Length: 481
Image 1 (cartoon, one colour):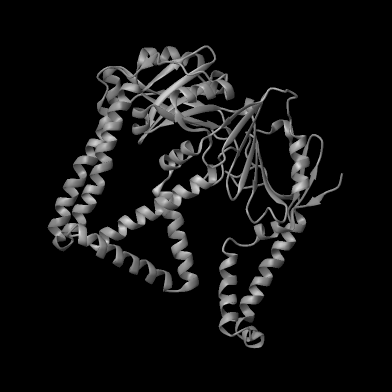
Image 2: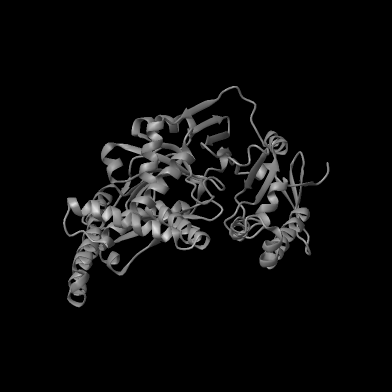
């Protein structure tokens, strides 16, 4: 076998992150000068030189990064001045991720990421062990060499479009959408100057006029914040929907395959034995409606930015349990054997109560010092109180659902983080250790927090609050590290 270069499109991977920003002003200048190359070169020769240097450095790095496909693994050689070489064996694989973007398909290029439970030897912390952009033929060759089981039994699950829409609604984040929207706004402003800002201001002004005809006293600030939240959430929703549409999961022996995507196509190869735990997630509304989604912890799956490690998008509890029996047969959900001690409720509800009290107090003093901002402060007060009251209701429910279920081969952990309820099913051999902690107040009522650490590239921590100390000590005896 001989060493190979990545696909030539990988040269772009070695350029700077904002390389395209340098090209747009050059193109605009060329258009503004009506394609007068001489005048354009006189005014932009320095920018052109910088771009050529960046491209030249990228070509050198691309030419020095090589790979070789072997029967037992992949050899990687990299580095310009200091050469590195390492072997990634297929039997260490936990998850392989392939992505075929819309622009990669015509040139038959595939982005390939291979991951194991160990830390990356070549890429930065948190990245995949191997990240390559390879020709389609090489991807097919690597895929065929991955460890597979010869079995005719294939179990498949297809998510309905309605479930995927519901899933995208629930897991869309205004924050992640705001980051994307903010990046678009800031980077776009660099390219088109004040034009984008004027469009946004005009949009806010138009929406304000419409809303004021319906509701009096609405300020442009209120409309601007509402518009940003709505647009940001919309970005997140549609990106999630396009990302997970056509979702299909299939188990063949000890191998699991996941496919999804609309414009860009993702495909995952998951080693069943490397799955560390399954996480059945719900918010309060989903809990009331008895629907949930299943996520898994497996190094490499859902690791990339904006990825969600979902196995079963949102559906009814009965369907989730049926799907888990087919796809994750060893992950059995157990009823709670250890529960939060009766009367142990203040640690659950104290944070939201403080939030509910702080917002009116802060608004009162703010209106004293800034009376002209009265309507804005009241708007922010309402916006702060709604999630605070909702959080209080969530934490009251969490007090009565938190606990630990102990089965023959698995442990089920039920707890709540912020607004989300988790039912985590962990095989006992995936538990690293159990730690018991006590606050000063817990010493008086003889309770403790049980912190369970599970395997992975980095150990995951699960915190179960308010368990009676004697019961927690009996549980922890078999897992003390």
